[in-house]
Amino acid sequence: MNVLLIGSGGREHALAWKLAASPMLTRLYAAPGNPGVAQEAELVSLDIADHAAVAAFCKDKAIDLVVVGPEGPLVAGIGNDLRQAGIRVFGPSRVAAQLEGSKGFTKDLCARYGIPTAAYGRFDTAAAARAYVEKMGAPIVIKADGLAAGKGVTVAMTLGEALEAVDACFEGAFGGAGASVVVEEFMTGEEASFFCLCDGKTALPFGTAQDHKRVGDGDVGPNTGGMGAYSPAPVMTPELIAQTMREIVEPTMHGMAEMGAPFSGVLFAGLMLTDKGPRLIEYNTRFGDPECQVLMMRLKEDLLVLLNAAADGQLGHVSARWRDEAALTAVMAAKGYPGTPEKGSVIEGIDKAEASGAKVFHAGTALVDGKIVANGGRVLNVTATGKSVSEAQAGAYAAVDLIDWPEGFCRRDIGWRAVEREQA
Image: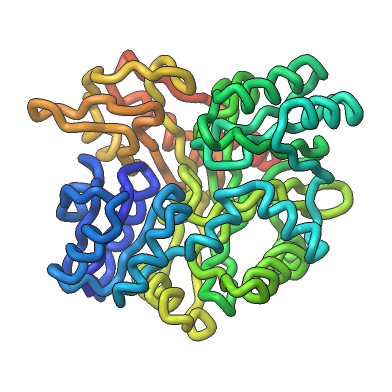
């Protein structure tokens, strides 16, 4: 099979690495990719926002499957346009991608189908949102409705912070994503990530993970796109997985089909495990980043077989098996992230880190004069496996210490919840 992978981050490097191992693969192309992806795929300069150009490339290269990594192209309808051109796609339609593209869309779906989630209000003006916040009080959660690269959410512990967050959204801090705002009840509990591969009819459970969104050790500082993750999440017991499928995933699949937009692709449920059971925080309609990296390290199956089955509506005939080991990834970010990251600094020692047994996935890197340089906020995903989360954590941080990049930083406590459980 000839495959085109869309995207340029750490998630796409992990997908490329796993796809490249498939005996079914003939050629793997990636657009736009990054220096890590280039180790596994042939990079092509395609404007992924130009869907007609992507379709023409696919016809020219006899592409059998397009795998869409990031959410932006999905929300922009690349799945619709490629399918209309007769090209097979792993990823949802434009309407189905609204599960991620509009938080309000998802909240309304939850209300309609009785899916457990936080109480909420949707607002198109700052005055109405502010009035709701003042009525509900703090703590409270303010979310830009649209895509904001993981940064449009404020968990406000005070009324002042909540009102500032509302104003920031409507004043353009997140561009068009903040033109509408969702204000949610503050939920307490432990967060977990749960993944399913979907083909419009069937949802195949596809692993658990825990992400770490805050920039600093001890979960302090602003939210980021994710500073690290580990898999599996021990807190997601078989009973909780079954309950999540029954109460959250299956009603979602039913609801999307009923509205004429059956969901096909990755359904990634961000969950809050409350004392009343799992409740949906939000959906993503693609693999998480950096959760994808730890899932790919643990997946036993041929990824291409699974994605192909999802695109064909045949997930009922395949299964997903996992290695017993835990996997953990620590994100190395550029100074200034999650604000304005410093770009251009040289990174050395990646080969030493990988020689130690870790896998380093490239996220925001570029190749300049033969050297790897920082070219984004989240730059590297240093990933290791072990018999326990503690062992995987030790392997990942030993590898981090072999990377020579003074302008980079990382959290040093990724996996702390699971490590505490293992040591208890």
